[in-house]
Length: 639
Image (cartoon, rainbow, N blue to C red; front, side, top):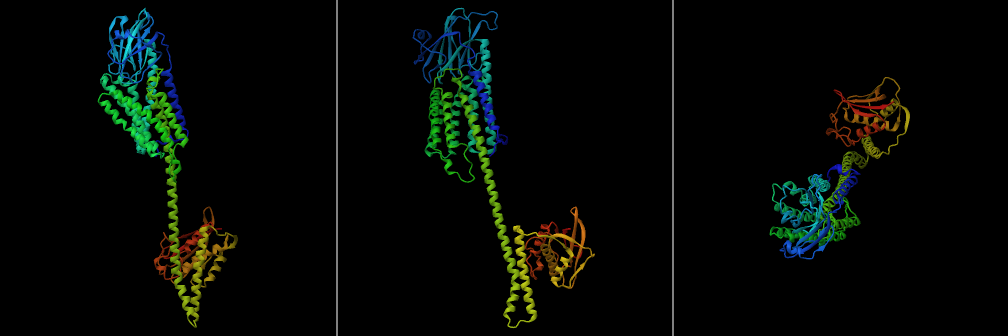
């Protein structure tokens, strides 16, 4: 599997990781850095109302608990009252927003915040939160906001927080100009993270479309839910869809995405860890944890949102350490087979990977932990960013490993197929060789056997026996020469000699009156291996004598011709076709080839094959160039 070949180039993954980490650092700086000190608030205090029925007047009579920065009380069914003591805020007539200040509230997922400002004569509360629409006449941003009037005197502002999510809240009082700039930095930071999550999802889509692996499906769903989770949690749905969807509907979707993204994350890692052959009971435990997801959805359907979110947190608290424990039991490295893709991680690397995921989740994603910064109370999508980046790199390395294993397997299969083909060809060659020997030696051996079985063989019978022995010897000699040729063990002993003299010497060995040599009387001196040249000449003449009519002459000739930017001596053999007929030009020089009508005479089917190979070994060539009435062979040898 490859997935996007451009991703697999060496050096791409480290540079990609470096770029995304820089984006994450920039986002954290843009959003998390305390750009403005909250100097207008002199004191913060809270009071927990377990009854959820107390009025502002009743709370004002109670003793409140002071706190600094972010109030973090975890999940609770109680309402929390918060008092902010604000210093004097005199009007500034020369400023654009000189008469007002902004109360900026984070995080984005709080259900309901009520603002009470009794010092300014406002007896009725004003509301913000996920369960309330944006104030069309107010200040609209990704956060929950209240625009308040400036006052020349210090005063107390009261808030009542009631939410099914974690009771973590950050409240700041800022000049509107400062809030605008701070919101711009927040939008850039969160926008970059969401853009990165969208890119991760698109990469997962490409990976799935190319690999069609089950793990790619879980990755695609997990990354898609991470995008939806981030956009709802950070307030983008309220900003984009607030005019077409009810606040309660958006809030419900937000909770669905929160619980679904965590379970999809666990589902992916169950599949991923299964590839490392961990303990069966560890995988069973993680799958049992996944069974909490239907229960979370059931709680959500019956209106118990807090129970659903709390169960989701319990699942995350159990699952992430369990993944580390399951990774500890992995043993895939002990049973790797030939051609199997090597795991991306060694065991120490796998343990470090899940240890870092645990640390990351501990510091970023668990809302039960105390939060002391605006960044900390809404940093869940950052876990999706870092885990998505880690998974992207991991699966790229995994794809590379699988690709290498597939290439190795394909190469092994090709080598095995070549070996099988070679062995098959060897067996076929052996079968052909044995068949040729059995056929060609059967008749000569019968002649010899008949001769030695006769008490007083006649002279013609003895001559036939001698000829039979000579035929068998020629067959065996050709077999030996072919074997040497294929093994490359020919000895090429070059010397200067006269080609015509060697030809006449070969002709004398046949003692045949059919042979006629036409020569211009010109001397043809060549520099080659005399013995090998003799083998070719002998095979060509012997072939002509065997397969031409006995009453027809065989014409032998020599001439000098230009050949491959040089000169060569060209020896031609011309004979009329006999009972064997015309040879097949396509198969003529293949090993063991004999025409269908040639089996009446002894032959190995190796002569022409051997002769052409020797001719080419000597730097020349042997070709078949028939004419109208003659079978013609040309043997060209460089002068």
